[in-house]
Image 1 (cartoon, rainbow, N blue to C red):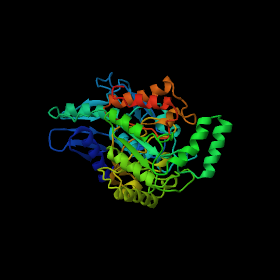
Image 2: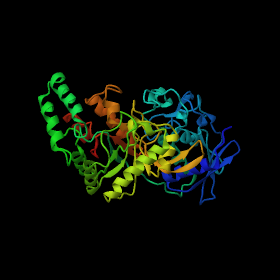
Image 3: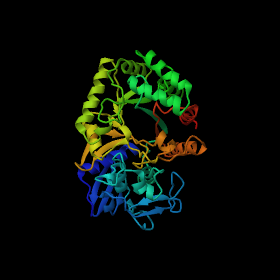
Image 4: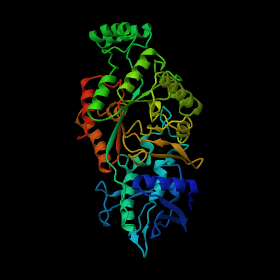
Length: 452
């Protein structure tokens, strides 16, 4: 039978404490686990059997469903819950004994498997950017990728906790939203050499018959030597900050600080224009973070080098922040190598974990949580902030190809509404350089409204 290490049990207990607001103790008990309330000797909750599937890296787990409502419990999404790892569930799934409750489903194993991306470790079925794609995941194959399955099961566990210890008042969460912007290209023209500009001008004129863009390119290049031109299509920073401030949000801007591939940016963080931009963001109360270059995701020393480079620029500009986080370029990620690298670089949080090809709940949750390395069996200092939706995942023809119509809008809003129902956080990535039309701006502005 699978065995949780003591550090893993302590990590799981910390997850439960953050979710429910009380300190818990988790101990091995016969073939399962015993959950106790640390400051209370009254009873316990027993998970009598653990599922070995939740300690294995593959996507071939069996799958079934549990109808909570039919069993007399509440389903937060008012739907049967996906039950990973089992073909058939015992009945009743949850029962009361003399002084304790018994849960016949390995909710804690599921939490461990999903939050720690055990499924993805050492996978070789990767896409052309070396990423584990959504279409190979258990969640996609079984139709629950757009559901925060961990949050759903912890909601049920919260009900069991409330029944076992009726005197406790569980922590109440509130829905929130975080917006972030990967600064792949702060300017369409400014940092490119004239040879590239001339080639772009030829494309504007001969391919697209766009006289305005043809004339704009050299004008922007010539007039933005000290700061970004307000006419630059990629200079949407003031507008983004305006929108965030209007809705009580703080934008996070993640800057590339290295060159490891032609996929990387054409600017340097030390450039006076970029430093001026960072100062402006900080003055307005927004966040600056790291966007490690394309080739760093398997190279911890490079992630630390680029993090230190950004810290040095921020220090020179007098920029101090309580948090220092960011996201990997192209969402490139190897678990847990990349996670450990972020931790060792002294970062506060990472918000990479979403799939590029499909939106949803890659980690099974929309709550931020402390990280754990399942290989070393150590709790980490860094926190994981799952990413729920990236604009091009839904809009771009290379991914879902929903464009800018009602279907795309509905997809974003469905995901936001799901986060709202479980009182989690809807995290949205929209690149500053992805506002190529008024449709982009209209859609983004609608998505960040609190009442939508």
